[in-house]
Length: 203
Image (cartoon, rainbow, N blue to C red; front, side):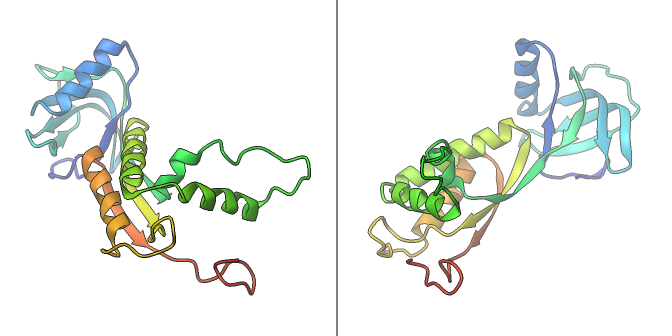
């Protein structure tokens, strides 16, 4: 969270109510290099009233001041909160939502059956697919108030299990998706060492 007088990246998500036209004005004002005026904002010292947030032309927060009159600033219809962080993301799973949320008559549904569904899904994904899915997810996160994401990235090989010419191909695609969406990101390359208690990953 930025200090009231400091400059920081735009890690604030405007959470306001009102008509759609008002929301469009708020979104536009963020990129106009102007000043927004919130009736309330959550600052490092707690909630403050009549807060002016100056936005630089590059989209960063130039300054934050509490207890000021609106003047010519663009009014916001509701409170302003710091953006949230998604601390555990597997972006590609966004596209498989709904594929493993049913219970079979045998009652054999569990984590490992879910994982098998996930692996079958992965067998159809190309780097282009992963980049597109991640970009769509990150835009959805931004719309929901998340301004940064931590990506636990273990999708390293092609659908046949072979490495790409560039071993970091999939990681580059995740980073490209984050840049397209405009979300701050941390990528954590990871791998499976075990497929269960005492079992290798492939079982």
